Image (cartoon, rainbow, N blue to C red; front, top):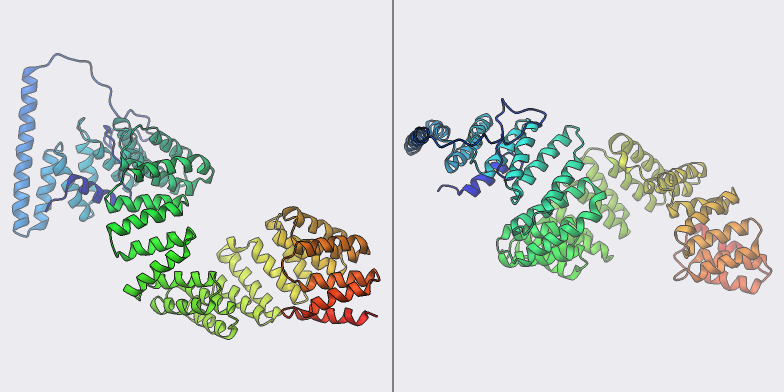
Length: 582
């Protein structure tokens, strides 16, 4: 069966990795084109001349002769195919196209055949000859642009694409091809974001676009946002408008429905994406890929129950879908069902043991379930199976922290830092250095703790958690109290009603000997703290003791002592202060 012209075009575009874009535009051949792109794509029309009947007759005879030769080659090619002589057939097909390059159907069919044989130079030569015809259709010029780009001739590719847009601005294909040329130039180091944005703006201006145009443009614009975040405010509403209009047209073709859903997903409209995928599921009932994507969209949209239902349906039909187990595990983690999460992560690993992240996810679930030894076994398995990396060292530190081996945890984190410096510097962020700071502080290495906290704050100056922690560490040790208060005030600027930060402010004042002022801040901390907090009660007890109010002091110290889940050093301090009461 022969492919339709449209399908032939799509196969060609896919084969070159660049999706083609249509829009008729005459393009100079490779030899005559100005590589700067300044040469006109469409030659100026010659002065009108009176028709010459003899010349017209000769031209018509020549056209007839070309068609006859083309048909003869085509017939010979068909006969060769029937004899199983594929090489001879391809040669005859090529000659048929070259004999009459104005025959769009034959040219596109031969292009498809040449592509299948990876004869890209012949594809380019054929398209150059075909587009020499002023009546060559828009998609032919877009195909030429794609072919030039595939061969690295980006100046010529850009000329062809620009000409395609000028000749058929109502077709999305020209814009798409031109943008892909710009993207190729960007990979070579050129700066082309302004040109891409200008091309998209031009495409947005077309009036009454059809549904296919709306969907393609929405996807292109959404893809551009990955390159230029500054365009988000301008582009997102326009993308949304295109997708809404396309969806309102009630498309029935599954591919187009999927593309609309993908577009919504790209602009974080997950609720709408889920609705589109539900419609696609009706068109393709039971399709596992659609079910999986629908489940993910529902989960991200906050519809956890519905998402879980679809994931369970997938596993009921095919228990070997590891991704479904992974998502069910993530849902279980979100709901603090750590044993269930671990079960699903183990199943996912059985089905796909090559995904290292699954091992780390399982380690997290086991640590959350306080199964430290099992977590260590899983991490050791990952270390044997995969090359050393940042996450291996990082999770080793998390296991050491659970075992309260703070010195080992700090050593593991330092190893993770070293790996990140060499392999992935983006991991050297404020959170990593904050964790290194807290670990060093727990290990009693206060000098290094200060160094890491300062690095965390340097990475993110408004990181309130690190600002407060360093300030409190100094306050608790009675060191650098003025600087400690400044850091805590910066944290409070970010979160004025944070009970922990208010407690730190009060404790720093207490250490300065300003007990009455400290008590005012401590009572604010109590007011803004949800639930019982042993350390806040302890600080109140100490302040009231200092102010010679032993009854009040005992009240809060006993409240602190009654809280079971308290750090050992805090428990010891509570007992020490209780002994000081009369």
